[in-house]
Image (cartoon, rainbow, N blue to C red; front, side, top):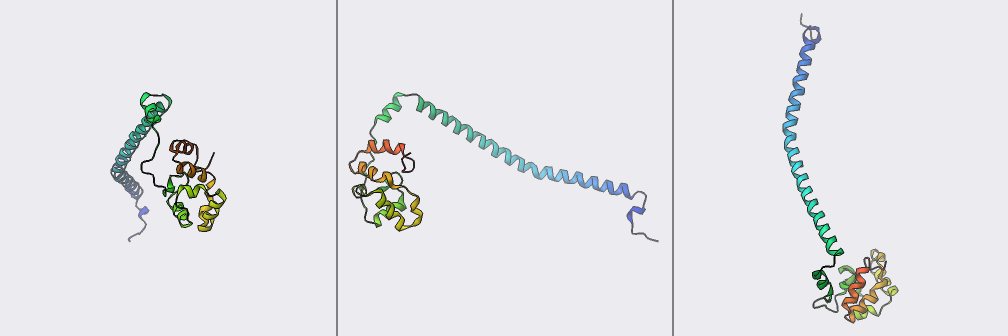
Amino acid sequence: MFELNPLANPDALWQHILMLAVAAILGYIIGYISGKGTITDLENELSRLDSDLKYCQDQKIVLKKSNNQASSVHNTVAALPVIPEKVQESDLKIIEGIGPKIESVLKDAGIHSFRQLSQKTPEQIAAILLNSDSRYQIHDPATWPRQAELAANENWEQLKAWQDELNGGRAE
């Protein structure tokens, strides 16, 4: 009579072990072949990132050297006046902390020039920003009138020096 139990055959256990071993070897070979392309891609990406990192580190070293060592070229460039070319009186984005959206809010409120902005108090400017959209209340216009006054008087060097000290339009 025919039995459905494969383990009833005395050699069945070895046959099962042999099939599992063959399946494991085939799985390893397939995984190795398919993973080899992925490994190669990842190694190439790592190599590219390493070269980019080295380039950035080299640039950082060059910048540090140029900042620490006063070269004649650096001094010559630094001595040149910082005068924006063709500055329009209505370009309020020159003020540190004012971007295109805030510029449009200020212009909608009737502030179209540096002179007009310099005549406002920080509280008045903050009220304008708050009335336009609540997301602008995080901006601190404390330095904007003074910056606008410097720009209106075309004190570009002094404005640039002060803006280098500011952090997003805020005095630190």
